[in-house]
Image 1 (cartoon, rainbow, N blue to C red):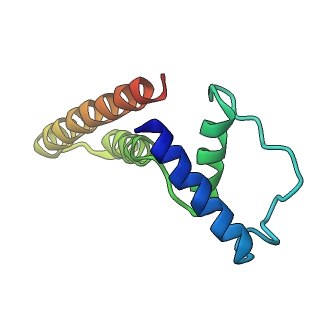
Image 2: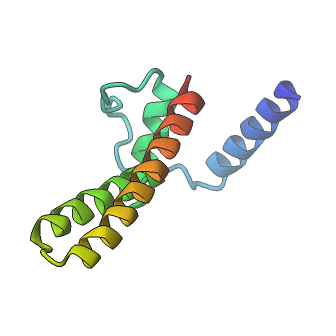
Image 3: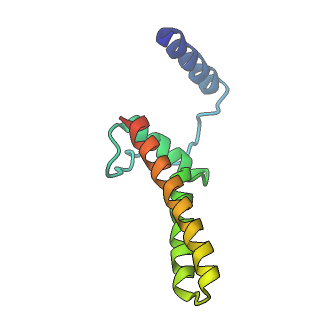
Length: 108
């Protein structure tokens, strides 16, 4: 199966090259950016493509929401609102940790 998948990728790349779709790509001829913690150049390329397309892995979006909720918690004085927000924070923490662990397992 791996061979057939590799062959498919190779055919798609050749076809795109013949059609000129790979001409004038941004960053052509430049070395790939080094990203700390990324194990392979393939992973690095994937992250670069996601960043250029404006796509964030879900764990980063969850982390932003978690940080925002924690800041909001500092401003709340009503005990009922505080309790509801703490419940939301604990759920976000759980989601974030699951997502982060799944991502780490996938990247091994």
